[in-house]
Image (cartoon, rainbow, N blue to C red):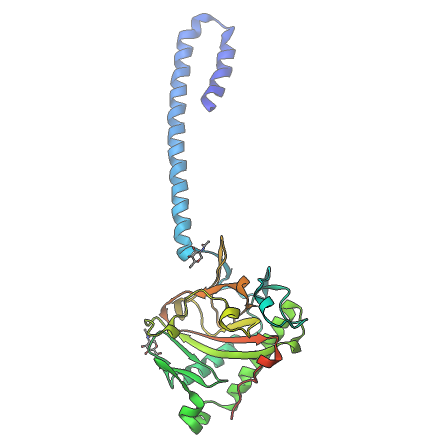
Length: 315
Ligand SMILES: *[C@@H]1O[C@H](CO)[C@@H](O)[C@H](O)[C@H]1NC(C)=O
Ligand SMILES: *[C@@H]1O[C@H](CO)[C@@H](O)[C@H](O)[C@H]1NC(C)=O
């Protein structure tokens, strides 16, 4: 287009002028037009290459189809909340007004639990899990029920180890769990505009330790997409407290909210609390851990007092 625009005014300028200048002027125009065409071709080629490079770069950047990071490992979030429309999953259960989600969504905060508290919780998880551990990559320790992964099964920590357990865990360990549970509960209540006392701790609540070892049983397959309310009917609000740092302590293992169009990831960071309503508005998965060890705690809440459990206790 540019050559014509440029050519036309020149022709107009020259039109009334001496005809004798025409041959050389026409030749000049032709040369000019040709060089413009050449430039346009080069420019088009360059633009094409740049576009191809951009496409390649963005496809490499969205490994696993992960498009957007909700919380980067390096950020310290004072609280980020994203509302999403509630699914109908809650309709199949008894409703508790003022608690059963009417507002749904997901939040992340780095200021509710300190890194020091996370560090202490991680030591509790490590010493408990040192008593057992799955043969596959995923081990759990549930201080409430006593369930501990061992080989391809679970044992009851309290029955299996008896009084020896009192030499492993201390009263302060359980106190810390309770303090953390309380702070997370308050955070969830505030974010969703419900009364703190209308929420109850529910089971299971557990520490998880994941490494890159190959899965041996279905219990080791933590990476499948799932809906918490489908897996555990009692859950209304789920929270995860991370006890180790993505890319410092382990690789892979990001939490992914799965959505049509764009998945959203939460990169674990020690002390980071990620919480969300438990229905299918928050379908999610955890990426496979590629190296290192990832520690976290799952703490879930129900609105139904019949499903409530006490905090794990030092007995
Ligand atoms: C979201 O993640 C899943 C599984 O990791 C993937 O199959 C899907 O293509 C992703 N979706 C988008 C829109 O990126
Ligand atoms: C992962 O943890 C298990 C114990 O649960 C251990 O036996 C295994 O060696 C660990 N794997 C790696 C790759 O560190």
